[in-house]
Length: 381
Image (cartoon, rainbow, N blue to C red; front, side):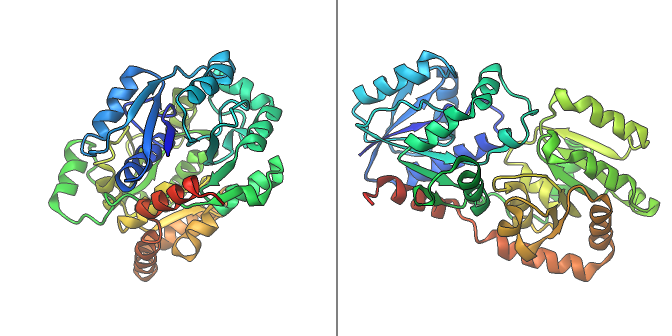
């Protein structure tokens, strides 16, 4: 079979979030698939070269197709389906759901839905094209209706699709994502050296990893830290790791200043994936009280690094974390503060969470994810 894999969601040489997930998944599926041929679709030559370098150790040869991604224009709505038909592909797979609803019947269309966050949080930063796309939900409904198969990454996302877009359950296949082998417990002097020299972290610390978008609830993390007993604030810093979105950054820094935490809160900026295991491993606790996640990979990565986790009691967390983390209501600040106090002061609780987290993270494998996806893509049933 000839599979067209749409890579155009990869738009940044400092990959984070879904972009990092797609890169890892693409690598694993090309490594495991020895039967099928692939065309990789890119938005531009620069991203194609970046991904080719990322995949440089994989010997499998692939064809390349450059198709600029222009949402809500004739490029993707009309021209792309014709191009794919001319290439005589068998399967068009894209790891997102923003595509033309007018694909040809000569090939099978399979989409992955990571989450439906933009429908629940329309205030999130989006391009003009994406805002227009999400405004007209009938287009999304038409895409889901015409897609041959839909992959979700959690039972929760499956439920959202069925409830909000009336997608028939038989069209949906849930396949969990994986935790990269890079994320493991690191106990060595190199951790402390990296934290000191590159990130200027000299104390034990509480950790948040991710963007500072509203649904991530980063303000609650800061407020909970501000409400910790003074002796715990003196002992622990709060480290906020990840890209800072300027749209939301000012209000966050103003909050830090209001509570006089400037010398206690550390922003690392973007952290390379190779260094994330060090950041996770060095943390006393990982705090992630997000209001909504399609899967929630950072808490699992933290668990794989031996760090106890606090996460939101909502969306996908109860199924991916279950009893291996402390789950709190994101809008109940006192619950977050209590959970932090418990982990930082109760060694037995802390160790139980570390052990449970390590065991839980082992449930999620990229190799398994790639194999299940490949089987679903190519099966006739």
